[in-house]
Image (cartoon, rainbow, N blue to C red):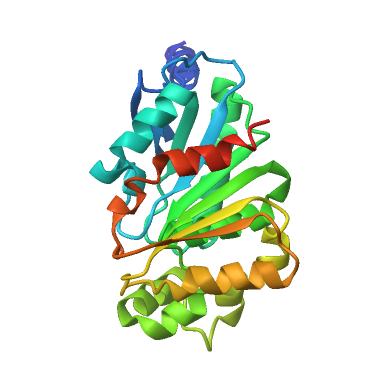
Amino acid sequence: MKKFITWALVLFLSVIVFAVKAELPQKEGIFTFGNNKAYVYLPDNFQKGKPCKFILFFHGAGYSNGQPGNVGHKGFEKFRKMAAEKGYIIAVPSYGTTWYNRKAENITKAMLHALEQEFGFQLNRIHVMGGSMGGLSALVWSSRNMERVSSICTFFAVADIVDQYNAKAHHAKAMISAYGGDYNKKPYWYESRRAINYASILAQVPIMLVHGDKDVLVSMNQSEKLYNAIKNVGGTQVEFVKVPGRGHDNNIILGLEEKVFDFIGKYNK
């Protein structure tokens, strides 16, 4: 009898635990799914279950544990306000300094699944953005999920991870950790995350590449090289925005907010 009561209590408590679902923040904050986290900004007119305009924003290196990353920076304050006013949801998967390895890929997939299944988000068409390492993530994710992409906009993106590996030793060290070896040992991982390899695929969607001409961490040549590669395969919807005097700095968005929203706004469906 005692054994039966014990098992009944365990079952009852299990039902309670599984009945508790993750909750979205009222306006912005951390959203937990499984053992992972994301940061979410909700628009002024948000209504659960209603069709939404959605921005998937990939953070750069150094952000984790549900931090909003680049888009949470003070420089993006006007951008965030405009997004809220215009009815955009922004979600940032927390995937650490992984250089979009398999772990990051799985976390992103799990986040989107949770938003769709638990909260009824309709994520058939996504505006994809990212900064620095997150720019690489945005480009690679888009190349593998082209049927869901409405537009892409990157800020000082690492478009050629092999060039970046050779240019910056601390980035190479992080990539070796993320991929389980250096380029000679794990060439597949580096080439599969080399966004410029997907120029012909990226040419199929509208894309804006924003980069400062004083960037010494990720050379502007990265975005320019991708721009030329897309143009060379017949891409007609790619735009390269050179920002004079700006380095590897989240303030790069200042003064470009209207331009970015005008760009992605053309492709809301």
